[in-house]
Image (cartoon, rainbow, N blue to C red):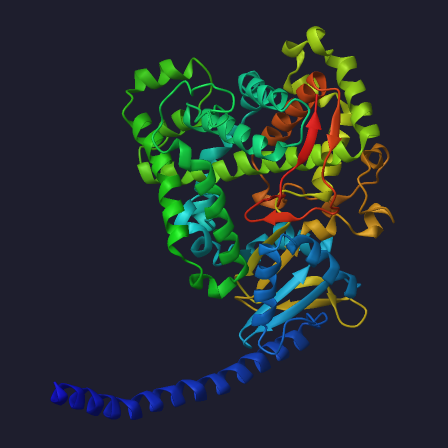
Length: 526
């Protein structure tokens, strides 16, 4: 035994000089490469007339502390507002940091810079490492792919959001009736409305996407058993939420994303994908004739995709990509809308008046007349949703990576008029959450909830981007707005009284791939 230990010690002593030698070589390469790399970038920036914006004051020497602080704020429900607070120190709406001298990250809320990234210089930017960040759950889908993969996904999915599909709101009513049962069961006591919205949207999304709802709203509280038996139903919603929270942390850690890969994350991914696989396999087992027959009962996203591809992995990935949009953005929009309406009773009553004039209320409610077309004519309802999306955009922070050496049009130099140099591989992070609060576009009351501002608001252009912009603009924006409009209108018909039970303002916000309230929407309704 002692001889084995002696041999191990000898091996370690012999190996140590080699390791020391390689560490020294790597260190020398780094201290040589990093200055030369930054010198090259400085020369390129000078040649193009670029200047850096101010440096992010909390970045620290390596820049890593800035990324860690962002993750901490996200976990505390303060990321979006923390970003808004930071930009108070940067009057020209841009700043930057360098991570270990190799990765430049530019933060901007300037509409012209956002326009460049998303549209006019679209080919200069890509999703970068987003695929690596999100792939454990979402695989190869429209949200994770660049280039031809993204183009193919968009071409596959675009027809599924045609106007006649958007117009189909009748399928929402049965699920909304279960929501109403939950609300009434609370007997005008405090409850979390957001929790119901997330269950509602997972039910409507799975019905639209998969052809069969998971019916998560059916529970012991109501004493109603789900009308179907779907394996993994009970774990799906919670696992989906947890997975997305981990995905967001991976995204904010940028190049260090791989440090966030715990067992809970991997297990949640498996639970979500297991349910998607169940529906995919079921659809693939249908004959073409059976698919056509089932499609007669109503539009089903999966059944239409199966007509285009029989690849189970492609189907699973695209379904989960759209599930993120179809479920979470709508639930978040509904939650923030009702949160603000509950705090502003005069807005709630004004909105109710418009809905009652158009569609009636109570026993006289004309539910069948609430359609895609008639909802679009409700101007105050549109203003309420626009204002909610302004203050609480579904994706408050986003990123792009430079595919070549390029520039942003402004924000550099002491007066912010110079272009900003963005080396290949650098990250540009933009926050429409902050852009939507800029006083030069929305006035001194830009942080207040005022739907009336939309009656005479000037043309905003790239200062209002609730659904992104450019070639990657959200395919499902009308789908989400129609569903949210329908739900708000029906709740206004059914429940005259809405009272907030939340004391904290502004509320904590959970930012993962999308945004919702961190602690829920606590209200009384009758």
